[in-house]
Length: 408
Ligand SMILES: C[S@@+](CC[C@H](N)C(=O)[O-])C[C@H]1O[C@@H](n2cnc3c(N)ncnc32)[C@H](O)[C@@H]1O
Image (cartoon, rainbow, N blue to C red; front, side, top):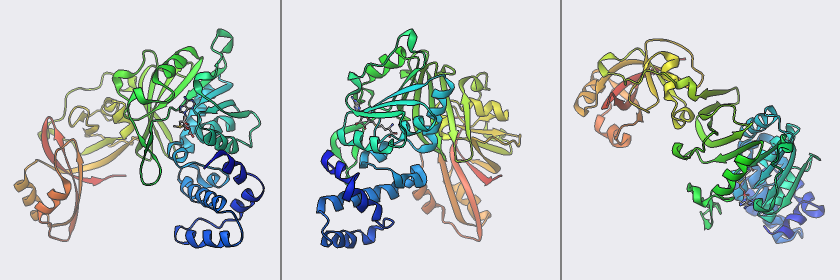
């Protein structure tokens, strides 16, 4: 989309056309486009309106019904922070005493909207003219939010002692310009030296501003965490979405942390929760009745020790994030299973177990083990009326199979 086409889409005939479209239906899109062109609408405007209709439908996953009042670009939607997570970013700035946030590389404005909704004044910029225009549209309801087209490098963020209530938010693009997939999405990069704005600018602004947050890939390496910052891995419904580095007033703690989010809750796990955990891995001949599997954000943050402490147990193997314990407790950021059996990993022994228990339907979970579940299933010759779940994993350094039942 060009800036001129965006301007047509948000006003007059274009806005009326967009508002008149029925709920998006991929199968009917071609016919609808033909009909609209036959009614005299310009082909480019029809294509742009239908693209928005498709992106709005896709955007519901991140923004609920609010997506239908927003505009997107393909990359902008893909990179946008989901509403529940953006609200957490906004909450942290507000609680840190921030009154104004500079969002440098605002994309379609998903984070900026959450800042504005939280009552924070927002100055948002984006290097891409159309993306900045889309963000301006998405922030049109908040007079205290301003968007402009420009480079983060050209914005002078107040950083002196007098600027105690100024915060900066950066969500650098992690895409390789010019390289895109079939859907038109540019390819992702996980290299810090390919961030835009640059990793150098990120660290410079982070250190100099009263409160700063920078959203990075979940694969951000522990060794690269800048001194004095808080690194927080966040998952939503079990999927790890980001690692945010928080600086100065926005860093409530230093070191690594995780936040596990769903529509119902947000639970934080801190580095100190893991301190002093029993470092000894479990032994296969001493497994307990319950198994706890930490949320992936906790594992990415390297904080499985917090689960070991919480359930007073032992991790199956170092860093694996699964803990055996005799205690039956509720940990909102871990899944719980009952263990009915455990054997060393051995095809013959596993086949006998399957045969003896007449297992016809099997769920194979795998964590830290080098097996191919598809091939394993074929080799097991399932037969019988019973159903089972097995976990192929490592216990105390050796591969093992644990037979599981979910527990509420
Ligand atoms: C990951 S997106 C931001 C997504 C946003 N936080 C949201 O939730 O909608 C990053 C944006 O940074 C912009 N960008 C990249 N380099 C920039 C620079 N040097 N100055 C300003 N914006 C830049 C890109 O155009 C892109 O829209």
